[in-house]
Image (cartoon, rainbow, N blue to C red; front, top):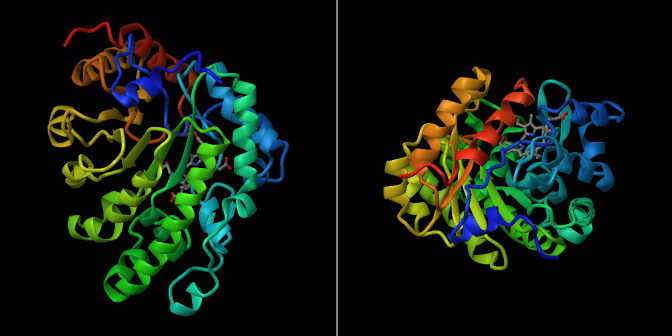
Amino acid sequence: MQLKNDLLIRAAKGEAVERTPVWLMRQAGRILPEYRAVRESLSGFKELVETPDLAAEVTIQPVDILDVDAAIIFSDILVVPEAMGCTYEMVEKRGPLFPNTIRSEADMKKLRVADPHEHLNYVLEAIKVTKRALNGRVPLIGFAGAPWTILAYMVEGSGSKTFSHARGMLYTNPKLAHQLLRMITDTTIAYLQAQVQAGANLIQVFDSWAGILSPAHYREFALPYISEICDAINEVPVTVFAKGAFFALEDFSKLNCETIGLDWNMEVAKARQQVGPNKTLQGNMDPCLLYSSFDTIERETKKMLQEFGPQRHIANLGHGVYPDTDPEKVKCFVQTVKEYGGVISE
Ligand code: 1CP
């Protein structure tokens, strides 16, 4: 199926674009009343994730309503631990909870390397349904968590400010951490390859908890596994988004991926220097900008476009859009990129 709007793919590959593409991390499921309407008719988050027709419906909502240049499949990074045998619950207003954490050799024995076709088929089906419904309007992004971030949830058992159990394991039992990272990586590679087979046009790897590791630990426990994932996905462009990993930008320049995501703590010019000219950069507006007036959003978005320049940039926020953001403000961000991305001279 030929894409009618392939700006995202061309920008990722470093091909010339007539305008900067734009989408938002967490654009599906957080801010739209249309999402809440679907969600409230169901027993919970997991029913939505596991029902392909509904997952496809909420995946496409931001394309229809916000006019973004890409869809991202409605799912969660935590489906991977579940497929490996470590199930999660999504507690209303609190977030994810794993009743059984992985903290010992005995816990590890309960895990398996998952077969995506057997244990994650609902995501693959959702991708197929979405692709059919999109009919080539925009590319569909598939995704997974980076191995370190997935380990963090499996060991900690929930979200956390410190992830002290997970980080602690890197000191107290590094061998176990590597064993777990190995299983997560093997599962993730098979899962992402299956997503591509099902129709994903680009893959993004989310290392949401990169920024809590020391640079040395990041190089030992995170980077080599991300690198393996990048090497294993060859048919579509890959984006690596590692929140808070400003210290690793030079390492990222060596990854076999097309795009590096930046958060708003990173200076664009410095990041460009460290990543080098051969990768596309994605980001990096502070999601809080969208709490401000339409005028401020337009002014700051133009400034961001100027900093990145018109090529090798995918406009986005520096992390997921916050749940209490007014969709009209998101539309203002998107429309400003559409009007000025590629027009503003360097
Ligand atoms: O009831 C609900 O609606 C639950 C809220 C929700 C939603 C809509 C969660 C719980 N996950 C999701 C969907 C989701 N998660 C998507 C779908 C596409 C989209 O929203 O555009 C994606 C891409 C994710 C990825 C994800 N989940 C990440 C990585 C990105 C990031 O924001 O850093 C992480 C860390 C998660 C874990 C997770 N899932 C849900 C919550 C509340 C959390 C964070 C928990 C914590 O604070 O640690």
